Image 1 (spheres, rainbow, N blue to C red):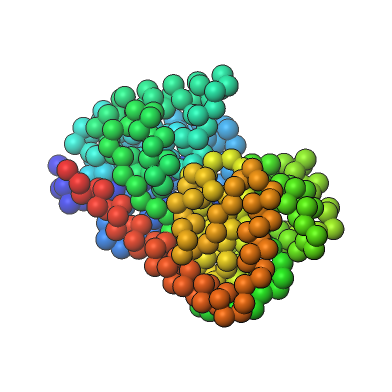
Image 2: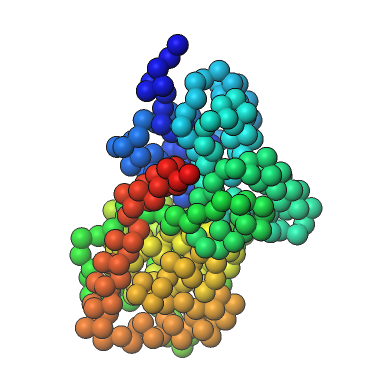
Length: 350
């Protein structure tokens, strides 16, 4: 008989892992790195492709089948933590095999937001998630924002706890001067709002600033905006390069048109001494509090123009004071050791 002490404290299961690049991948890797300092972990992860892309559909199906089979034969863990809600069947199998294990699910923006789509596939996905909520009624769900908490509750999850994300990207100094440009970091896809900023906001300004852009092209149609004379495309940037651009920009814009589970770019930018202007909805509005940055109506070019001009006209002293305070707040509020501590508290909750 195997001694109970030889079983892991946490069996962490995720289909989101490096070398794929994204918010969920960062969450899974950084959370488990912090948890490993205090817990015994058994990590079951599906790595991404070497070029940073997500795994193929065949790889995802294979991972699900192999993990389901493994869960039938491995010993129990005190906690089985699923890195995202879409893989809830693996938590259900784990609970059937070892009823004493506590099942925890993490929920992100793309996990639950698609379930609000009223088209056929969105309704089908919502039904799938609701089945999981019913079968795992005794599980706990960790949401990364109040907005995601509300969606999870609407979909049937009963034990929902909010744990905001963390970031490692930060700068040791907060530059008071700026380069006169806006900065956008993120996927080049319509929902992120880059075309909105360039075509509707900057185009309506008498003296528009240039905007530097970093990120991966996800939509070729949206990518056409990179040809604008107002845009300087920097490609994909590493953490240190991102930190420099965040701090040097006149303002870091996060103009998402679609709902965001958590405004990670906003938290990163503030932690690097950047001045953030973000859309006033969903998880973004929770991150960008008045001590972090400014909010603008995601549908109003006039509102964005006013926010950009407001920041551009700040005296050096005001900018320096705001940036340093925002950096201090963001660095403390969005630390990974805090994420791990709050997650462990969910594990221990009866």
